[in-house]
Length: 296
Image (tube, rainbow, N blue to C red; front, side):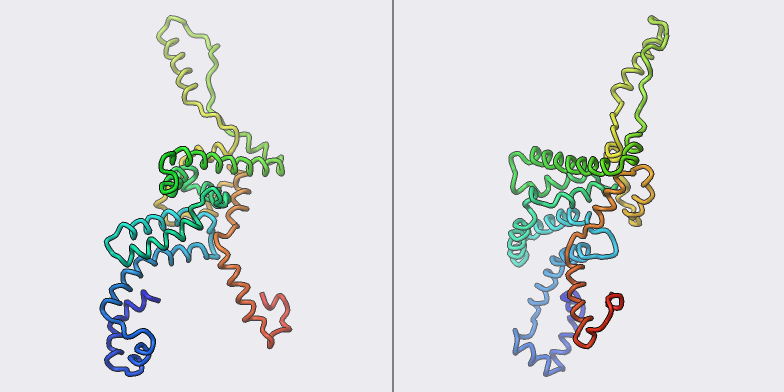
């Protein structure tokens, strides 16, 4: 609304000159907007735009939102830090007051719903690597001395939560569990291969075995495989997270089931609350006899 008002600044100025009712309305309320008011509005619009975009992302209903909160938390923290460090007294005051409220509700990372973090890990563009970036960014103010240790502990807790989920789903689907454990692992050649002990070939063979032992990564199941594989390209604007998991169901039989259940969790209750509010307008005293199917 404020953004649109700024675009029609000239029109408002013209109304002030030509419409007496316009002037009377504002004089009765707070007075006519002056140049300083328009300047403050422009700065404020730029500040609150990020919150508007985050709200739209959180309250969306036609795509996955469970993986959005962590992304936007970092963005919001960055914007608040910019406001507090700016030379604009208006933004400094607003940034400080907003940061207090943000810290109250979001900075208690120990109490943050682990499902939201698991959803981030199940996004193949980010995985656990994003937590290495996310936790230190939000822990700076609270844990200055031992930030890295606390961040690593929290990452380990998230991985443990995902592992527990994985084991739970395995116990409920023995057939998929067998396939999940059938993961290709690097093979190390036998040391019993006959080669001349003193030959150049023997030395190269022993070095090859040693290098394979160093390079081998033990992959126990598809969870290890998923976490170790390279992340998807972030620059792909057409990336569809549900489409990716659908294409990779055969590779991740258990993880795809977890992703299906995790991604259905909405990041916000706005959509459901809006649906219930709409119900009051649909089923009014004049439409009380509508059937449930018709109401839907």
